[in-house]
Image 1 (cartoon, helix red, strand yellow):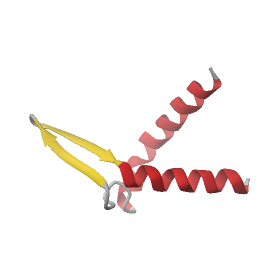
Image 2 (cartoon, rainbow, N blue to C red):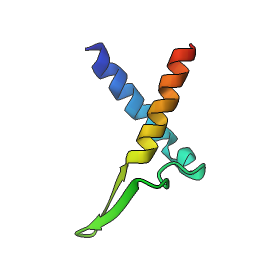
Image 3 (cartoon, helix red, strand yellow):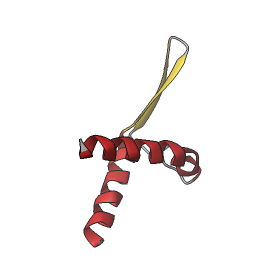
Image 4 (tube, one colour):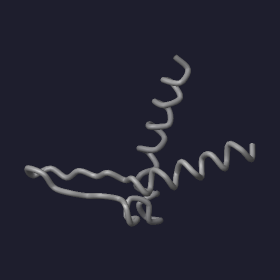
Length: 63
């Protein structure tokens, strides 16, 4: 149950930080896919997710 709360909290924080992260380049890295299907825009930020995961892991290891 704790992991579910942690994941929900992380998603909430990440969704709030998305506009700021876009200004510094996240979501526009090579490996981030954007496409339009039936009039809807979809984004799959693979490279940004890997980079954020590495940063979070490094931060967790340092603390």
